[in-house]
Image (cartoon, rainbow, N blue to C red; front, top):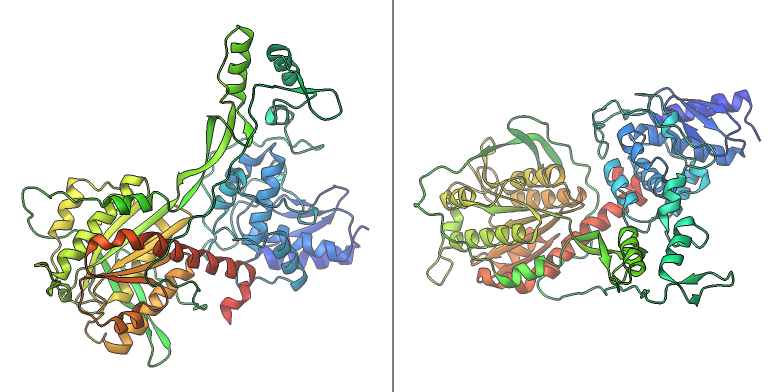
Length: 568
């Protein structure tokens, strides 16, 4: 059923409202709806289906999902494109304030009830990876790279909105023609399964290898010598420490303004509102002259072992003895070897194993004067905290995770100092270890501002799907006008805000005399542990870190499924 002129006009108003720009709707005889960035081409359909199409396609325009550098990666790859469309529809329609009819929201939620991506780049990565994402239904339409008008759909309506990144720079990529019959390239289809029973490659390999075992009822054979298998590793769990398994409620806190020195808000529990742009955070290198050597920082083998099992992502491995798909190159080598009279290697599979590290961590070290107190065993609290921070940073770097380390102290709300130890793109080398040794405890502890700045760094610079903030502190926030319940509530609110940004939080105190009840009040909403010695971290690390990542992911998942709760 083609829409009338009045219906098309009404749909255009809806599309423009969702896209945040002028977007027209035009009736067409296409099989699947698509947009060129200025017009949505609508196939014959019922009014309810048309509303779903118009809202989804308009949201893709608004969210920057159709940026040329992204969708070019999907040309000729029908299955990844449908997965990308599922993920981007979920992300685009999860934005707060978007005028989304309830029926459309339910359709998108039914299509993908899982965790929504935080950016189009993440959707592309997940669509091209091995994640089990349900292909988008026909009701979402499709994406046609060759039909997109250059610049018409590349720029989101408002790139400053949360989760909407500025588009990648245009490298004058040529417009690639669409295959109107199918979005899947014949060449890709040919090589998708080299043993497709009627494919030329299969017939060639069958003649080279020689096959005896029958498969199915069509008389085709499969190689006897190739083991067919797959394996899955069960989830491993641990116990220990105080672990929080539920996420905090929505906050809707204001965003810090970008500047050389960063300004952050602060929660005033007495008035029940934020003091906006209240604290200034500046970055510095630690001052002082260190000893001639930065000293060795021992890495606890237990910590390294536990970190090696954390934050892993699937990575493709070729030439495996077993796996889910065939490795074409290895298979051809096997066939050539057999034809030459050699045995040939049977490792001809590709497997996606969870070996890629996808974890970014900010280690935040409390360097205030209160940490100079005696921590027992002839060492101060500061000595133990610094040793723990150095060991953790070194272990994270050794296992291949992205890690940044900073100390912090304050002298009033206008002077919160962030002391650089190691940045994400730096190395924990002699210079970084020297900076760590140069930090000496002084000043006060405006912890909320330091946590907010750390969460900002983790969210914007880690470059990973899994992000953690590890706060190492004596749990005693104090500064000028920042004490008692006011300081505790602001610290807790800052930690909750970090979780809102999908940054898991772990708080560790070591050797401190702070009352355990006070620590529970301060860290109550996040996973935390109090230790006597730094060496105890190994047995607590895995359950603590996993719980923090789970809470961050579940909070993001809830926001994706119920985006309107954010403003409640």
